[in-house]
Image: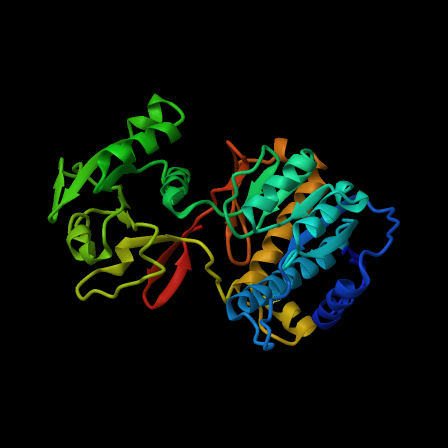
Length: 372
């Protein structure tokens, strides 16, 4: 089940949905392409129903999210075409496929001719695809997949997010004394030392355990202190902010879980706390406003976070292809791209590349501002 769309003309969300329904009935269409790149999208766009016709609610939510995600891809491709980017995009609905049907898709000439595949979100199917076509660049848009050296993971596992936070801190606060405050200092120390590039960097970092409101050893004297919190509850914010409230130009980098579960605490000076996070939309940002307006005009609905994610990821990949070609993974700069909802900083890992981009948010008076 494949379909190609040229992205030099407007395609509405409804047309996409109807085309996918038709595709489920009629099978794969025959395509001839003169475009530079062949991109596949292999995501669950539908949900199952039981014998009584009741739809699976969880699958329905996933299908809505994937349709929204694909809407973002559409708009990114429309905008990329204005820069000279040319691609044919083949779309498959991955939901509810039998083993035989999956094999037919994976082994088809169309599928094997792809340069890039966005999806699937199923680990087992992703491995089968990489075994059948080891040269294809697989983009995992929503979850971390252990696959092959050609995989791009746009999200890393939550338990490893401290790595991204620390790297973001080093890149943004290179002239500060960095203090790691952790309830598992041995683990944090191993993680940080593996990330530090040389001995010079390691001399700017100190390690401190936190237990029952006590920090040992004490925070260094002087100003320009960055306290990076790892694994400590935000119920301890007041205790932690007291350590730096009299130090000039000093801040706390919150644990990466604090922002999503924000806890308002009396007497805490929130201006001293910088929150690392992902999936945060700055409504007043011009690029965000432009995308939101474009999405509303095209699909007559506001985008969910999945629409923003689809746009950011396709926009990033398209620009990388325009700049570096199909081998772009070898040439990406160290710079961090700021998208409509996430920062993207792809780094090499055991399984291809992983996005270590993090947004740092702080409160100035009543407004949330991005540190970047």
